[in-house]
Length: 166
Image (cartoon, rainbow, N blue to C red; front, side):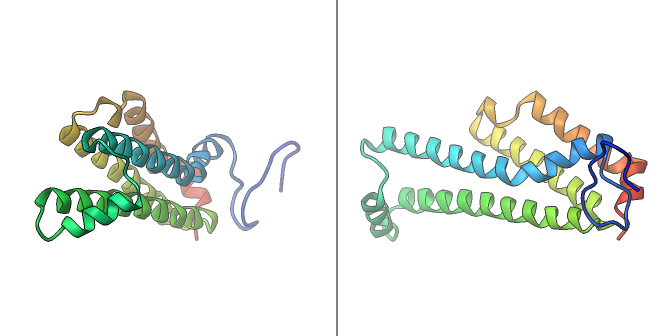
């Protein structure tokens, strides 16, 4: 039954998504958008750094020059591999977060475990980026707190255990 003023989301066979569960579920639904925005910002930042270092813009013509230099130049090969790795990593994270939304929507019992693993993986990736690039923006304290709060909530909440039962 639905109480007056309460919004129920998902199939009718499980308790509704309300309270803190609704709050943390917003993060599940917003994650693909956040990752897409982060990937676009990261690629734009990479392009700006490349433009400054190379002295010319990174466009299709420049990518063609890089591809021609791959057999002879380790720098071109490393740059190309870095671009492909960044695009593949963000693509994989977005795809996994969309898959996690489907698991949340179906109220799968293993969703909390998978979401916790995903949050931990994002933290590890951020730490690696921080160590490799020494970029302070890679790991903000608020992001660490948000990830840890997500992990604790999805791991310990009785509401989660009662709602995600399929």
